[in-house]
Length: 256
Image (tube, rainbow, N blue to C red; front, side):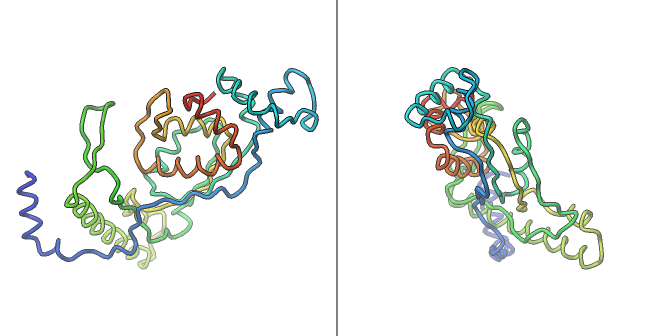
């Protein structure tokens, strides 16, 4: 079907004029730093103990930490960046978590289970700034902005699919079907939630692959939705470890 044929179909399709309910469709993700034991001096202390054998309290020297952290980052001495911990609460569509769980080294996850609880009526739909058109070959794709018409089409048909999926989910639950069976009707656009715990080194590796940044030595082209999560995580990390974050950026956003 050509674009012209598709437009004619939509214009002549009464169902398309009946916009589905959109109160359960959202275009953003949630990221909260719920707890952490992470600061820049932890990195410096871990590095210095290997050379002077001092205790943590004896080696903290904030006036020298920035230079040392930058040295460690530049020369890719990675282990000092592992002696810290951050736990994030994340709400995002399930397809984002499928990508997230590819990151296994230095990460721990606990995700909401649709076997044990009814999922929230919350589905993802791309926002107006989300590129919709894909061009190029596998491994070298580029994404460009969608037209207003394309965004309208996406929102309409996602709304139709989501509404039908939720209706079937609720019908099976009402009939006494087990939650682990009823969930089979739900698409990957439904939201889930999880706790994700990592250290600074594992987070930097994640960010190097899941964000786009002009300072990066190695370019990455992540799916926009996981980049949305990564950007919010990076903003929280930058607040608690600003020297480490600065060194990460100054050295090409390459994980040590």
